[in-house]
Length: 183
Image (cartoon, rainbow, N blue to C red; front, side, top):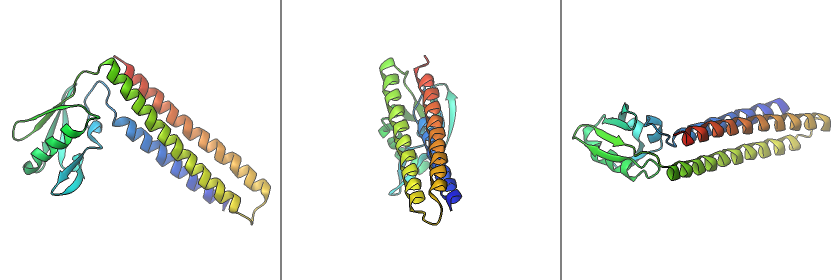
């Protein structure tokens, strides 16, 4: 029973850390990369569809990404969705078959905005971890067929697991901040 609760909590915490790292990848640094466009949704025949399902993306150079739609009729919709994605700030142009998204140089002010954004994402991930911990602790407290010592030991193990996952998020945050502030 206790091991099931701890295993489930650890699995959910791992997913929260992975989600945080994915979110950090969507915040741009100095180079253009397809991960920046991960959260862009295109209105494709009335359905919000992730961009990577509609087009291939290739780096042409450091700040330019070439987006080639699988369906040429979606070209205008993709262009509109990228232009509307303010967190990217790309200037967009198409030549009838591909879209070129060019990212502007990052100013120091913009870098600091991105650092704030990444810190907010990290805090959301920490809140998610605390919610998982709280739920697992409630489940442990509800167990009546095991002794109090067993529950206390399990709660200490849960705290250690939570602390390790928070540290993983903090490490990822430090790496991303250093990457963002690097000129």
